[in-house]
Image (cartoon, rainbow, N blue to C red; front, side, top):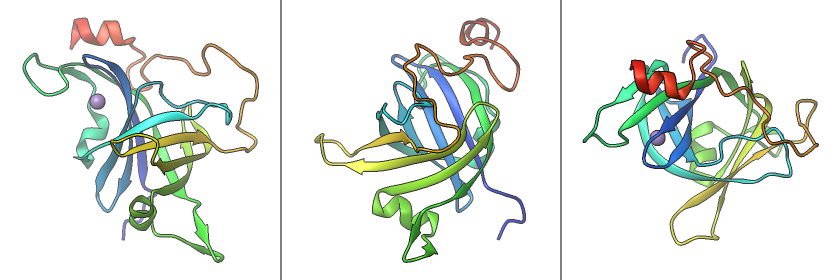
Length: 169
Ligand code: MN
């Protein structure tokens, strides 16, 4: 077992469709969802999250450009990163993260530069493809007003915009 807290990362990804890849370190890999609208601070906004293949742990620090012709070609930004802990309980006990993913009900507390507090990922059956909803939980970090932008859009790694990364690599 790792002595340090597991990490999360959100990578803004200007592929053919702009999205945010939300990744949680579970069992040594980054379990991942693609969220077209990104993560919200408002519990009233439920954002669609599509599961995507696990990534290697080292990918959490990747910022740059995926070349033309490769899968997901386009600029990748480290939009936010930090540590998280599992807060999903059942009968007074923590449910292991891998079981949470299997059960389609993840609840984590994020301690990032931008993202703070509880976030839930809930598997739904609204669409033919497996899809989940990403929902801010109601806590002291929740924002209840309707805003166009809840977060700064620059990289927490380099301070760059997605356009700068696309240009500079
Ligand atoms: Mn992506």
